[in-house]
Length: 113
Length: 111
Image (cartoon, rainbow over all chains, first blue to last red; front, side, top):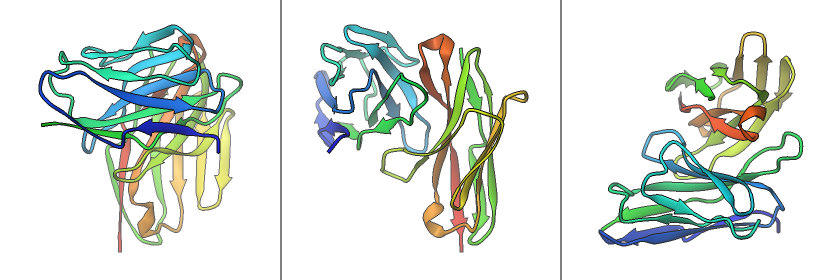
């Protein structure tokens, strides 16, 4: 089935650790995004990429890093520099050909322990 | 840059009609869309408007006025399962076709 997959669904991080969240899509879409969502809040953009080996910082990129080595994959690393990483992380993708809907992964809930 | 404004919360009773407004600012407007998100879930696409007017999909309709930089989502015959957050979003030609979301409107449907 075509779609977008995030893993893991739940992730626990110790203070000072880096963790990587996976996002894979087989929709052949160019655009991919990472959003952070805190309880009862909206979607805040972390990073955006529309082409392999290129990405742009969003509103809250500090403490996060990404790579786009393949069109299908856009992993997000939450570094130890992110002081308050506990949140719900969502990956999204859409085609840049015409206007199409965006598809979201199921999300990763990250908790610092 | 782009910015979108929508009310933070709306409450309505089952069976009623509710309208969620969205105003936007963007230099290269390329469509207004709406997404629904239930608690703990991922947003899912509801509708899209590129041209002025009303688009109807079952109980949900979406309206756009490009001259007013304004749109709304209309939900009719509200059901309890419609309790969710609703986000408007725009794409911008001048920002690499980036999709930008509003802050979301939390809809609570009461019996």
